[in-house]
Image (cartoon, rainbow, N blue to C red; front, side, top):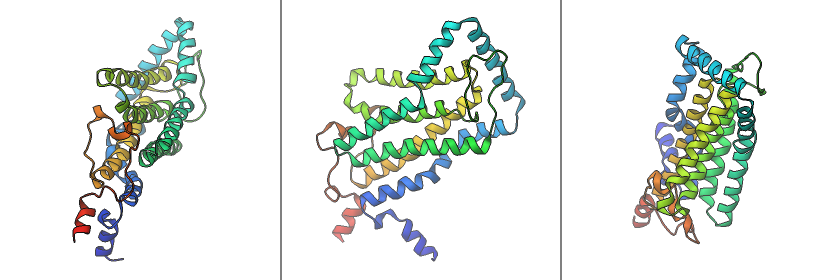
Length: 271
């Protein structure tokens, strides 16, 4: 395949809106590398055993561990939050319900975006955990235990993926004056789950920060692909305060393929 053939293959103008969406969802994995630069820096510090980062991890773990030992009731609350409320299984079940609801409303592409984002986050997180193979904290008198490797935190990464997905899809359904509330709930959930993992002594602080950054990178990559599809079908770009697809409020949130041609499609028809 020559250079011209390769350029022609990658040119989204050759394909219809749905196929372009599929291509961009796959190519989002490559775009993810750019969005994951902050995560890469954290990973580099962890792998290089940079003394200031290790010191911060140890000091934070020891301070929060002492608080946990001094307050058994706090440990019980943290266990409920991390094992039930903010557990990855709970978060993913919520997104499954979201996808089912979107399919019921015939928001096919939005449902695909949500499902691909959450699935990609889980696979990427598992892959990085296996490659890095960092051991979990070993503290005296541990108050909790967790299996598997430590970096990045799966709880933190799942929260940093599922909360934005839920927020960006459901935000248009919330009256404008109430929108700060779901934003606050999402932030508290993401930050709170990170706190529980470090306070219970099952993750280092850098594990949590790495999970947050990696999860947000996945969301950024797939959202960019979805926004590109919106542009192709002639829909305006939206601000985060509006959600990813404000038209989800309507009874028919997505037009049939071909009913709303994008700029490239319009030029092709005109030509």
